[in-house]
Length: 185
Image 1: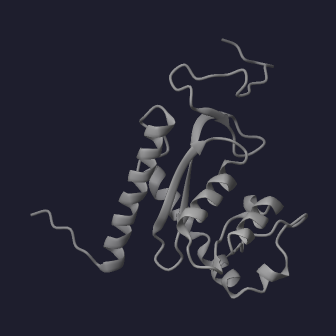
Image 2: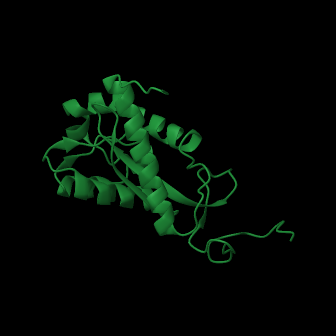
């Protein structure tokens, strides 16, 4: 078929093989692809994934998944959570404050929802240094763990693949942290 000049959206396009997959593009000039989104909550000390989620690809999926993972995982009042500029949205910052979590997310240059309470916080400096480490998790999960292209159809199976992939990442990370040796004998 020739789609030239046609606007494609989730309302007009449905995958023949996986109806749960949604059209999504990360950047305005990028092409849309049918996909799901994987999310990870990482602790700062050792770089281990403490919670994971897979969702339908939408514009708000990252923030919604983050709120769910933080609510079910973070127990210590006053804990800090680091995130990139995509999370610098007033509704997300307010939701984290209601959960009694300090949201040191990267600030946008204009229209930032982050105020001085967060930038003065000691966890903000740590978060800025450690924030990049979560990209290692996603890099490993795409290259080694097979999440670049999911092998399953349907959100429940993709969620299981995501969870198992992040569990495998944690095992390999712990092997490096604790100096475990794998023998082939």
